[in-house]
Length: 308
Image (cartoon, rainbow, N blue to C red; front, side):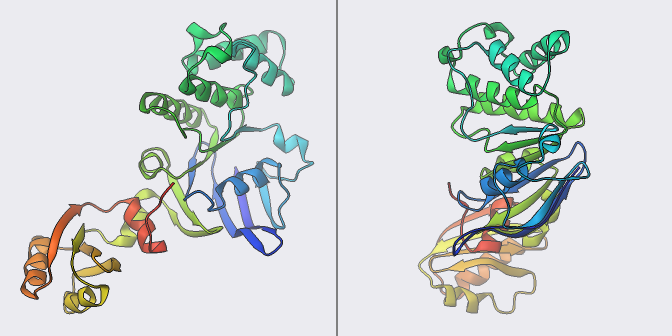
């Protein structure tokens, strides 16, 4: 449905998007996961035609995208980070207006507006002015505007930022329903758990580059299939490196002074590791044991945690 090839965007000497490539099929939820400033919004803006790429191509439904490709834009729904609502109008009036921009009218538009209001859970407040809505309700309506014309490709840029947990769950359910109905979803986020729960495939993006791509399970295998052990204490990275020598089933995901993140394979491996570390007079103050996660994958790829 969508294919991105060697996409680049520069502003003078600054490289915002640095040669990224990926593709997503019909009905697939594909995630771009990365911190703020990683290039996610720039990528979405190029795909939607708001920005022109410095080089590279975007193909949507077999057609090349550009800022002037109006026929391609008609098959897209775009949900930006900032809500694009007319607050003096009702939810129903907002949906009618945006549907009209996509040449919808009459009974078709009326029917679709009703369907979207049901989908986003705003049918009971559909005739109230948007200015009376909570932040979560506005976010749901913002998503509805991107869906009203039944797009084949839905571009979502951090659609759950700043909403409460209940509104977030509602938004994610609407996105899953759209994908089940055949819409391809391109989803940007910096929330690890959200990406893990929602996306069928992910690309981890940082400093404008894709560092890894695959399913959640495929990405987790990058840090091993055993337990992830985080050790904290009064030791240096070099001391920990020396202490780990000779452990065939232990490898370091991240080493720094006072903290080490280790992947440990095999039954009883974690207990044996801790015995060995304590036997080498390393001062250990805390230990945390978890299964592999996207957070550890990101740390392995970048050497740092993903922060807002």
